[in-house]
Image 1 (cartoon, one colour):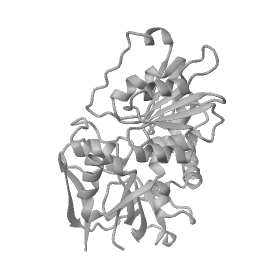
Image 2 (cartoon, rainbow, N blue to C red):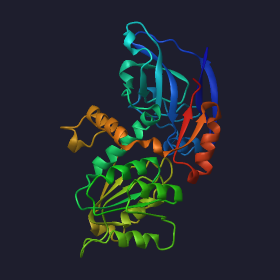
Image 3 (cartoon, rainbow, N blue to C red):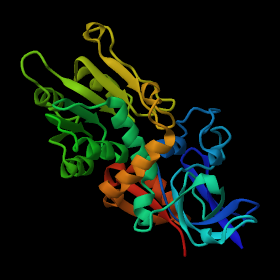
Image 4 (cartoon, rainbow, N blue to C red):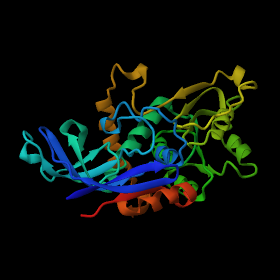
Length: 343
């Protein structure tokens, strides 16, 4: 029996390769994948060849060792069920459904400590959103939104939509989102944004500023998130942020440079630029927050948000090339794209 694994082989090229089916060793699980989620941010950067060559893939995920170089495997959202167990593994693990940070492939090995057992009432298409929900929880926590604040979110891809979905639970005075694609804007409003604007439309930037006009001198956003993946959006995110506001930067631009205008009002604005990334906890919160506590909260929010409503496309692993072509060439048509696996 063979397994199928997805490889990024060159810019704009992926292929599915057959490989021997591994056997679990002591303390290991063999997982048969049911569904995996494509990251429209990081994976498309890799697909386009825009990720920094030679950079370590991810020090925090054991299944993503090595450096960014073709050919390579990638992906970090897989849900499957235990097909076999190695010596020393309790029989109770057999047939359990689990989540793992793992590349796209039909079967894979994992240590018990590398998987999360799904709650019994959670569907695989909900659980596969766990990494993005964890990212959104981290972004919102790092921004620390407060009652009555004015908030702007640049980018309404999956991470942006999840950030918006969490922010609408806060008693904000205004929540404005910006994205170039109509499907994302309409979805943003449906989850609770007060308005969602096309940043490229004439007058949209001025409209965003007007909607963030607070009483008297409190002009502009108190808190702005940049999660569009577009380096050009960072300068606009800074521009809509008011005096002493915060800009949380969750985008990874890869090798794309970000040019920002810091010689004007920024110099006197005392705006704080905050780098946010899910692999670590903000230093000020580490006394009471651990990775485990954050992940417990993320699982709770998966249940609360029901993110499977954002799935727009499903492709079998054998047609993965079509999935990446869609995200690369026609991103306006897709929200979350999933890869499915034969039973």
